[in-house]
Image (cartoon, rainbow, N blue to C red; front, side):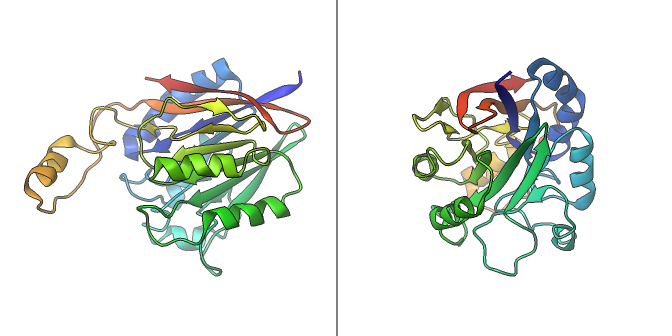
Length: 258
């Protein structure tokens, strides 16, 4: 066997997202047989942020590494926890001194997979240059197996990052917009890419949230409280096949489990 598989799970939203992972991830792994499972979990606590208890819950499901995004620090008790050596990464393109790290290495069957998290700058908060930071990470890695979660709003910025890292990253997967895109491909340099993996959570709300408050917000312009939709979730993910020796991707396909 000359290749292995990464299962990357799109943004986990609240209890429905965590529940569907608990119920469906074992069967999904039995079917797809990934060597590594990585998930974006920045919305896993009530739809915004993550807590230490939820980190441990998600890791107990067999997830090897967790990525975050612009809501990484929404829950205050995560700040100190990010420096406790668990396989969780916040955006790497943040100022020095911010808790946590932007890249983690997970190992299995002789493969060292680097997992990095970067945030875009278009329509987002103020972050350091993600392209320059990606170059700096690439220069320091001693493994060709590198998965980048690019948490960004603009489609163009995410596509540009994939081309920027073509031939250097194993995969550049987009997160943040919660809507799965149909543009998955392997670039000629062996980098798998998709603009957005989608959301693991309630599919019939608005990006995982109850639709009525959001409709009121759009119709009136008045502030409302967003709540995670109270309904069963779905898993949105991608399965990426990777060469053991080179770290280059050979295929990527969308996965959905209801």
